[in-house]
Image 1 (tube, helix red, strand yellow):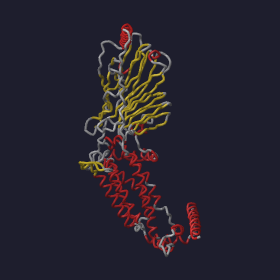
Image 2: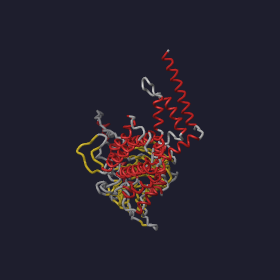
Image 3: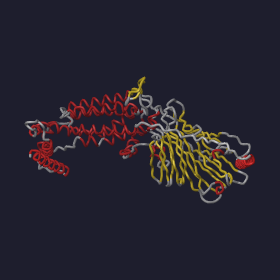
Length: 616
């Protein structure tokens, strides 16, 4: 028994689509140019001594006024200090200058160098907004020294810390942070007394800056998996990192966040920001950060002296199960499907993820979990595979008759085949025998959603991160068994063993399929099955070991099923009897067959007219 041309084309098409998607998702990053630094230059003037002295006096008076206004809002005797708030999952160090998070550590996750995952640290990270110190002077909240209040443990075991700043006129700003047990989401509330005096136009204009440091071992790959996500006008959307970009939101915004490969930092407004903008920049230097993001968000406050701005900060993993419970569409940041394959996210969320969670809760080895998941998927898709091979077997039975048709429609002088006439007769032959020309191709195409859903699943599931199996120390990253002293174009500077096993098993399938294919003399078909395995060698070398391990197992199962189905399940004599029985039945043309025959007939007439014109 064997595979027909349509079957092979179907599987090759899967390969082409998959490789195209891999290329899109792994496109190289371009460097962004650093922002130009504007240097102000002063010019000497030739004014009279009296005019110069007047200007100097005016500058001195202005400086005194600014100093007085600043001192009016700062509380004397305060010094910059830090306060720690933590639960079982996250530790946040707050700075009293600006009353904002200074350092955020995730307790249960390690970086590629075995140090703790730190989602925020460094001077670029900042939360700030302008307040009116006086009628002609503003100050950034990040420059104000707040007084830290004692940490309060609430009845529900949550913890709250407040930072207070005010002046002698009764104006007051309070930053309050609340962290709950076993939760990554932090409530951040800004309470203001004298808001009508401190803010212009009943609007709080918040600037939020974050810097995402490298967490995974491959900087370039982590950058390809980094996105800027947001919910605007109640709809989730995202932008890929590239070398940088920007986005303006004129409609209400729920939250804006930066998703690295497996971790998210996000700012949310419980009552929505009325408008916002975001800008991000990514360097080409792989020794630097992944991305720097700046958000300018505008929050409308009610008219009057008092205002409360309820915000939230998320510092945590890109885990679908965790994010879903917040009911704010943040789970969409987990890329379980995008682009033309966005529909596979439903397969991942509602089938693969529940099955995966069940398996990992009962099995210690993540490699075995992947193996069992693969077995289940191959079991489910085996009827599709069977139909594909059955179609191939039928085609092979009809091969002698197809060969006879080729000889019949060959030009005796030139030996060229009249392709149109041959195709029409071949369609009739298949139809009378009850064979569908798409019988081998369609089942193969139906497997594309499975291929793509697993491609996204194994790249995005944080539960694979840090899990070892056989020689792979981290199934969420490539498994390197050797480091090359140079980089090979399209391949890289390391050798991934699971990539080699995936390629080798793919080649074995191709060789076996080629030997059993009915049309193995066609030079194009002869080499086509080898293209995809060769491309895998370069494309898969930088992908997670979980994915290449899955393909190794899947290919091995496919090869076994192919041999078993073709050698022991498909009955050659039964197929011959069925074809003979089909030929006795009246032939009913499908709409598709009628259209194809009409097109072929029209092309044949056009060709005949063309030949007559040429002879004349």
